[in-house]
Length: 206
Image (cartoon, one colour):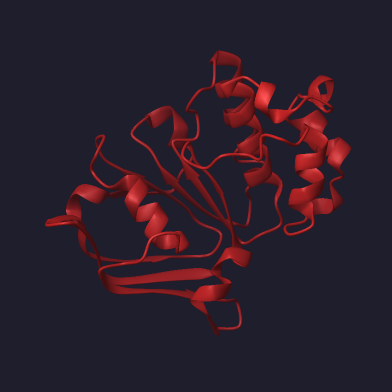
């Protein structure tokens, strides 16, 4: 899956958060959008997922056969882990993952039990998400992103709410579980994206 962006812009009220963004994101590559807080990293990722409409410009998804994917079908191609996206808190961990895989199966024939073991939360499989710590929730979000069988992974500030052990878990798994996928990060923490092949500064899009 490839994403082509041309003269993309997003305006809130009278302020342009992103403008004149033009770039190509290639299948199997890793990219990080960097910039200080408030520079538009999260806005750009939300534009690329289709969560937020653009004020100007175009975004195109092209599949491996060279066919353009309709905007209404982008959601089938991607998974997102971000601080502003909430888990369904009424579910237990097992219920949440079982619900998720109905729409986005896990890669490599991983089972729900495998998922619980990989995110190191087997002990909490029957615990309601509402009672998870913020770090546990973030690990679940990242696990769903890493293990979903989709061509594109979005990671916005991926180590938010993680303790030292959680950050190490992220670093241990992010490369192994995202091979051959298009990985897009938004970050200003170098440790989160040191593995990335391509760095794009959002400050250029003003």
